[in-house]
Image (cartoon, each protein chain N blue to C red):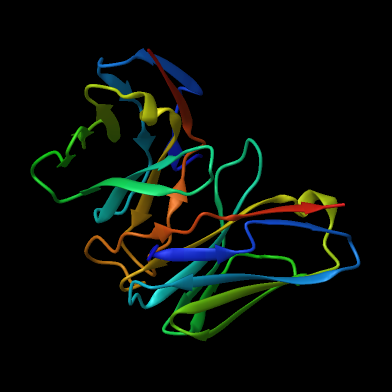
Length: 116
Length: 115
């Protein structure tokens, strides 16, 4: 089974909608991440969870709300988004979540979000 | 200042030839890690290779090798014997020593492999 899965793969929503992105990792990792990838910009880290606790929040607007119910699942709840939020949202996981060693991040296929 | 710089927006290479993708980085932390990822048009970021700042030898993984020049702060990716399936965006990323394992990515290089 694929290591990190994301659903849905594509999402189109209006600015008043509420939707959620789901990420699941089957690698037994302790840390999970949300990234945003906009056109012509580097990947931007949004949130980091380590052992289900949020350890980093990179000044992300409150219209993005993460949830990590357990170490295998990560959600990104979306509400009242703006057209500039249209992007590819990537989820990743890593074994430790802490510095030291390789702690390589493994990514899912992403959700391509379009906000109308 | 950018922490990761990839100066080549696009590169072209013929099948079976080798290609080098450039990456320079900026950090004052003595402990850091450097990563290369491949992103095909499908969107998934695929981990390719890792180099730690204290590693004495350049990392290699199959057809991928990392030309690590610490004094110059460069970590170029070398792909030998290019294949058509290597056509993709390639991102260099760095994790600095302290704190949690967050990565800073460069803007990427688009590699096109022609027959």
